Amino acid sequence: MNRIVKATFAALTCFGAVVAAPASADTIANPANSYGSPYLSGSLTGGNQTQYFGETFTAPISGNLTDFQFTLNTSTLQSVYGIVFAWDGTGPTTELYRSAVRSGAAGLFDFAPTGVLLTQGKTYVAFLSTFGLTGNSGLATVGSCLPFVGCASNSIPNLGTLVIGNVLGDGPVFNSLSYLDATFSATITAAAVPEPATWVLMIVGMGAVGYALRRRQRLETPQRQPANG
Image (tube, rainbow, N blue to C red):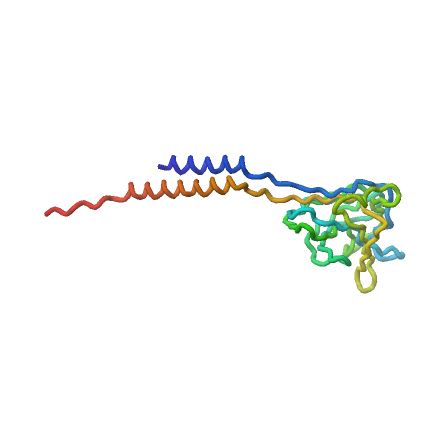
């Protein structure tokens, strides 16, 4: 009887793998890098106080944010980190992700969050940031483009606007810059969803397993013998 149970589970596993709809992913990407945006600063001295540099985007599907990227064109920063918030139209609200601190050397910054669930149609903002990093120093220009000078970012679905955060005495103040877009990408991956055939197979399979277990129990239960008269 063990063979019946094992065979049923094996069939469920194999068939379920075949008919489950694969995970889908949508990527919002602005690869244009024709302008080095104003400095991202590692410290709050010398009048350079921009410590957040990012881009808003609207989730095209519900799913997990699995990747986002920025580029530093030039940099003398010691360190930076990536951070993602929900966006209410005027500023960041709930923090959803913060990366480990990494070297601020110029180049591509690729972040791979886990467990960051986004909702279709909602707007979010991703940043490169130096805010709160003690002992940091240096300046960086961030890859970006000017939409009105040959950059097609205005036509990219779900791409928002560039956002900077200037740190003043009472904390960061955020501003959207409609005339700029960051060199940026974000990938949202939807979870695999079982197709109807999978659910039917699971129900039938579990019924078969239940029947096999009940039949085995009946066979193994000792039969009562009639008493000798």
